Amino acid sequence: MKRNIVFFLSTGRVGTQWFVNTFRNYYKDLVNAEHEPLAHRYRPVDFYRNYKKTDQMLDDEEIKTHLGSINDVIKKGKLHYIETGWPAYAFIPLLCKIYPERLKVIHIVRNPVEVALSLSTHNIRDSNHPYSKAAMLNPKHSRAKIRGKYKARWNHLTQYEQNLYQWTEINSYGVELERIFPMVKFLLVKKEDILGSNSSKEFINLMNFLELPVRSKPLSLLAKPYDKYSKQSNQITDVRLIYSYKQTIKLAKKFGYDSDTLIHKDYITERYISKNE
Image (cartoon, rainbow, N blue to C red; front, side, top):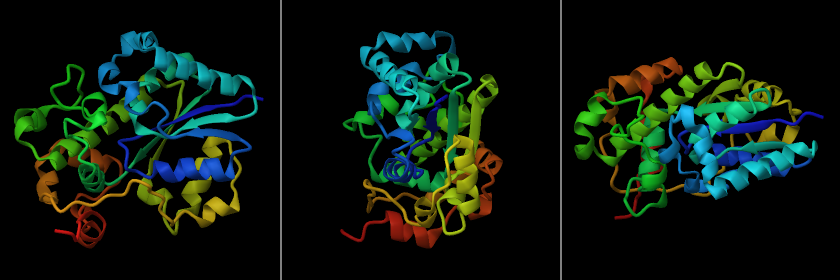
C-alpha cells in the first residue's frame, strides 16, 4: 500500500504540537509522527530558497541520515510519515523533487500578531538562542523574498517586528512553493479555523487530504490547546506596529484575515503578558 510523506510548513507557534500529539495518540496504527527531529540542525537559513542546489543538503550527514530514515518508514508500507516542526521549511523543496507524487504539504498559518508575539516571548531572536542564526530569517539574506521597509530599518526593529518579518517571509515562501511544485499536493489551513469549538468540518477536510480516517477522540479535542512551550513576557511591544508593514498586511488579507481585527487586546493581555514584575 502506498504511504505518504507529509510535512507541515509554518512559522511555528501555530498549533503543530497539537497535531503531532494527536497523531501519536490516536493514529499510531497509521502514522509515524515527528515534531522537530532535527530542530535547528536542518540549517534552514543556509539552504533557504536554494532551489537549483537542493541536493547540497545531502552533504550534511545528519540531514542525509534523516532522509534515509523517512524513506525506511514509507518503504515498509505500514505507516505514513508526518513531520510537523517548522524548522524543516528549507528541506521541503528537496522532498518536492524526490517525492513529487508521494509528498503532501500542509501550509498552516495563524494571525501574524499572535505568531510574532509568541515567538517574542521565547526570545528567539536572541543571539544565544540556538534557532536565532540557524532558523530565523532576515531581509538581508541573499535569497530573501521580502525586503522593503523591513530591510531599511532592520537593526532598529523590535523583536516583535522582526518576527512579523519571519511570518511574512515564510508564508510568502509557502505560497511560492505551491506555484513552483505543481505536482505536489498542498493544503492551506488557518489555525483559527481548524483548532476550535466549531472546527469539525475543517478537521474532516484535513483528514481526507491526508487519507486518514476521521476518529471521534481528536474531534472532541479540537478546542483544547496543547502547548508544552507556552511562555509570557513583561516586555511586550506596541502590537500596532504591524500596520507599518504593508507587505505583511497584504499577505494576511490573502489568507483571509481582516486587517481591522488582527489585534485582540483581551486575548493578548491574558495569553502573552506576564503578571510578574
